[in-house]
Picture 1 (cartoon, rainbow, N blue to C red):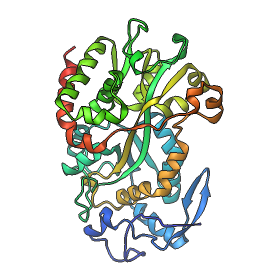
Picture 2: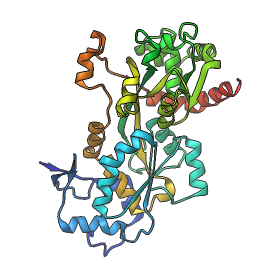
Picture 3: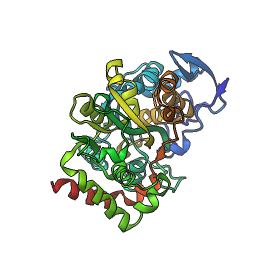
Picture 4: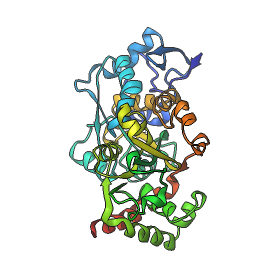
Length: 370
């Protein structure tokens, strides 16, 4: 099998001719090794292989770098999976360490990072809607040939968020309406401190059908409806900011039930895996992308890494390794409903790239008004 690998465009593989800034933008990243490369297996991952000369070329990008190549991602099981199938193989490829760090994914946090620690981060994992907004604000490297909101990168991973609950406290699996029923199921609930996913969950609990979510949320009445629903649950909410924190709250007993990436539960040790149930029918799928901070625009290490992470081979490697659904054995052992799991509800990046600023401001005022 032969695979194309988009890493970095250079006319002179021996690096005798310096790269011009325009050649370092994402629009040029598709030319490197454009003739296709033989695939090899490294561990459980299929990686593009290339000649010794090609390998020396990409390693030379990193040769003068003293510090590890730094990456911002989300911690927990997400980082553990990325470490196995993305970061470790790339570090072996370039013979240079990668150093992932956790962050909250907030645009204000990226802006602060760029102001206080420029040139620090080679790649940043963020929600696709955040990437589109950050791109329009000039915080990320933009492809000058692509004027669209996606001009700083494309979605490269999808992660499902579902409701998890403590099996010992329920006789039958709950749904989102039960999530709001604190009379029958007393205890705290954990939700994301962000309007994304949280407003959708509130409307689902209020009876809005999945196919009507954004039609409702795109109206003032729909926004009011979502906040009124959240008002009912306000005293019982425990907030989380990162996927890792969402899992930690549940595992520590900080909430009876809460929204969480399904992979955080499915990849947990067996004792925790058996402890929690997951509500599959109305889970939400969030898209993520890799961005290059603007202050790293002329750093070949950042551009090469991000282009590699965005390659379809790496996208598929993460998708294969990240547990999104229960195993076949679990499905067969479960209820009849669990044997016909519906597709997830896709979080609408276009909607949120247009409305996040306004709804975030209102959401924060509401969350602070305890």
